[in-house]
Image 1 (spheres, rainbow, N blue to C red):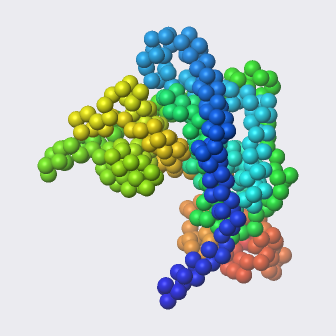
Image 2 (cartoon, helix red, strand yellow):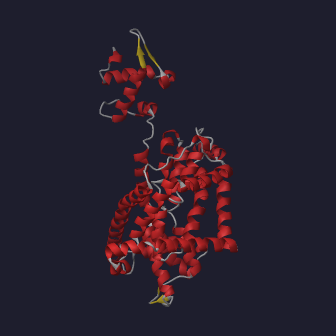
Image 3 (cartoon, rainbow, N blue to C red):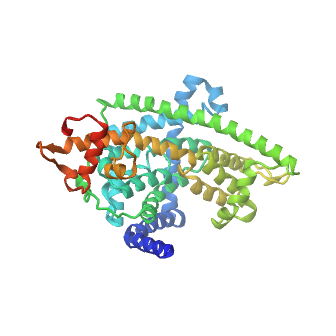
Length: 442
C-alpha cells in the first residue's frame, strides 16, 4: 500500500514538471557552452572580455597601493585580493545608478522567460545572480516575494547557489583564475539552475505573475554618481570583513581537523590521513566522470570537497597555487604529491567550483531571505497541529487574526474574509476565547 502511495506521489509530481523549462534550461547551457568552448568567435569574444575585465580590475592597485603601500599589496593576500571587491562593488553601484545593470538583467531575464516559460519574478532573480550575490539578487524582486509560490522561492534560492557574485569574481580573477572561464561559467549556470529547480520542485500552484509588465525593477536611491560610488564602496565593507573572517576561521578549523585526523590515524597506523585525503577519495569518481584524467582526479576531488564543505574562496585559492606551480615550471609530482594539473583540468575545475553551493551558503541564503520575506502563517495548519497555549506566538497571531474577522451580533458569531469558508472556525474561535479576553468573545 505504501509503495502504491509513493508511486502516486511520484506520478503526480512528474505530471506537474514543466519539461519546457527543464529542456530549455539544459539546452541554453549547452548552446552557450558550445559557443564559448567549441567555436572560434566564442573563444575569441570571451577571451577578449576576460582580458578587459583583468585590465580593468588592475586599476585597483592605484587605490590599494596608496592606502597600504606597494610592499603589502604585492605580498599580502588581504591587501591584494580584498580591495578588488571594494572597487568592483563601487563600480557595480555606479552601473545600477545609471540603469545599465537593470537593463542588462532584464534583457537576459526576457530571453530566459520566453524560452523556458518561467514566471518573470523567478527569472529576473536568477538572471540577476549572474552579476550579484545570492542575497542581493532577491532584492530585485523584494516587493513580490510575499505573493510568490514555494516553487518560485525554491528557484530563487537555487539560482543563488548556482552562480557567484561579480564582486568575488574579481577576487578570483586576481588569484590568476581564467576570467573568461569564470564569466562563461556564471552565464551558463543561470538557465540550467532555473531548469533544474523546476525539475526538483515543480510548480503546483498558479503563479500571480504572468508577464514582465507586472514587474518593475527599482532604481537605486542615490542622488548622483559620486554618492553611488561611495555607497557601493561602503556596502562592500561588510562583505570584505566577512570573507576575511571566514578565511581565518575556516583555515584554522581545517588545520585543527587535519591535526585531529592525523592523531586518530596514527593510532591505527595511518598518520598521513587528512581532510583533503578523505575528500580526494570520496569525490574522485565525480571528478573522473567530469573528464579529468585519473592521475589528476584526486587533486581535483580535494578542490570539490573544499568548496562543498568550506567555501569556494578557499578552493579557488588552492587552484591558483596549482596553476602557479605549473607556470613556474615545477615538476608535476614531487614526493608522490601532485603539484599541478593540466590546463584542461584547471578549466574543468574552474567551471565546477563556480557557485555558492556549500553548507556555509545555506545559512547565508536562509538568513538573507528571512530578512527580506517572512512567509505567511498558515493558521489552519497551526490550529490543527498545535496545542492551544497562550505562550505560543503562532497561536497568538492566528487568534488575533480570527478575532479581527469575527462579527458578534449578540446571538451568534459570523466570520468574514478567508475565515468565512472554514468549517471549524467557530470551534477555533471558542478555543481562542478560552485563552484570551477579547471583546468579541462576549
